[in-house]
Image (cartoon, rainbow over all chains, first blue to last red):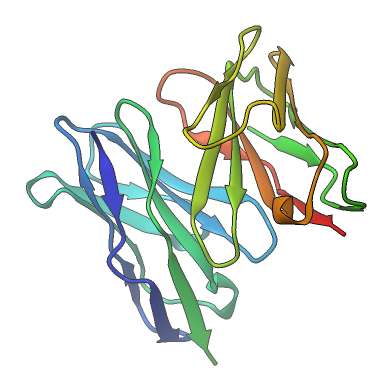
Length: 110
Length: 115
């Protein structure tokens, strides 16, 4: 069975600082990997996805993520955080089925 | 592209009534649609998966007679909460998938409040 962990429940960064949100998965093969963002009271928006090929994928809103097979990780990064990035972030894995991580809440200090 | 519309966005109703929530894929055909429930500050809880023209597959612990799901076409799925009670108050989110390993695309959610 596949699983997804997001070790950080809540992260606070200052505006303009860099950001890295961690995601680790467990699956017997290379899964398809996704990052979603959810603003309060809204649905989820797809930030980026990894299917195959280049392990560094670019997404919307200046986000990128790197797939590291050896670490079973797919961490999300952004070089300079904006106040509007404050939201809940979910990592998701599609192997046999779709599984979402528990989410990481990002707070941004002015 | 890949827009999913969910309606209504917020509904308040009396205990005992039934509420229908619609989920539409506007610019693609959704072979599979998912219904989630989300409690405050928690992750998504998958309730059921539906494929067009087939009966929905419910997750363990989800009452199929309570949460009726219909996926009559490749662009529309509905969730009906029957005889709703205050404990059914929650944020319900649908998503649609074009097939295979394609990403799920989400609606904006429906906040259901049962008085």
